[in-house]
Image (cartoon, rainbow over all chains, first blue to last red; front, side, top):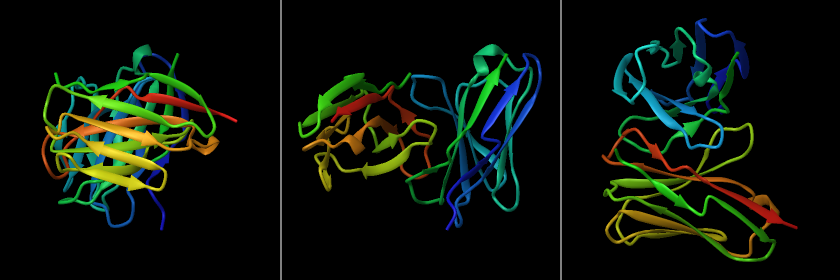
Length: 112
Length: 112
């Protein structure tokens, strides 16, 4: 049973560009959350998707947006990239009405 | 702002020794989770505690939730080199698929 799958694993972008990160949740999970983890810090909550809608959002600017598809997979989009957006982006899936998250291995984004 | 403080930030001990990591907040959690994260990987859930005063054991790891549900500790007995990693506590302030607020982590190194 595959866990959470994220792609790509690594990405280098130039400041001002746009990026799309992808996540396939664990089989049977219907809720997807995205986190940003800067080097040496704990993950910070970006937003959560359930039933194809954004259910909760953390303190991130509108440059960060997302989408959830009918098959529960999700995308994270970041526009107008800044150097400070360089981080490990983690996707976590869970089954609604339960807690306990399964994390993917993340996408390492470097903005130059 | 709801913050989770972990201590110590770094810990390096000899194999076979015991250690305790702490997670503290001024707010009351509905549940608290502990994760371990290896380099280049996403966090892996170790345990979820939900009841004040609850103690859970996972082999050599003992997790305790404070009576007031504001703090937690992780105790490792007879540490092994395989315990090396970043230990993260994460709190949720509502039951269900609530966003997690992570602590800054404790980087544990076990010396052979």
